[in-house]
Length: 185
Image (cartoon, rainbow, N blue to C red; front, side, top):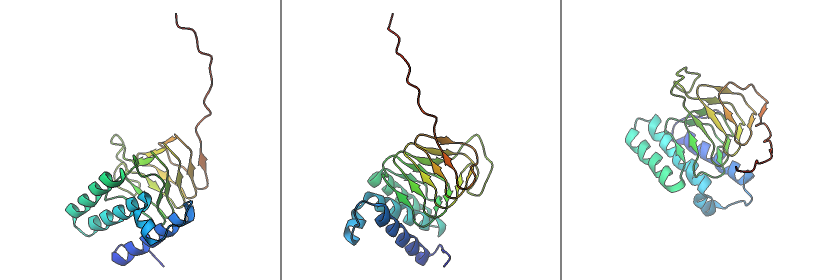
């Protein structure tokens, strides 16, 4: 069944988000525990914000966005169109602006961002990235600018991605080098 953008579509996306949280979480939270889970609160507030934005209620969308920022520490723009099954492990400090398919996983301190210097539109608006399905963004990684990330891509910890990535890839940082410290003169 195709996802819609009305209230039924938002509820359907939230059901997928809750199921994914239960699948990836160490505990299987009940309904109350789910509502108190920071990850689900973040996703719920974003879904409300995005719903308001799409339905022409920009002030209410902005209120939900600000509430998300205050309550969970996550900065997810109301215009960000994120598919069902969204999982944000630790919302504090993440920033998301762009479009993503189903089952996006965002770890601590990562994000998607616009590049103000590059204004091409690859499908999410001028300068914003577009991600496929089943993309996993590890801690402190980022997707920056108008790039397309394919489906089933894993972006390693600390990797800044500024160019297109095809399907079924893993992007890793080079290993750090250990060098001898020189004595201070």
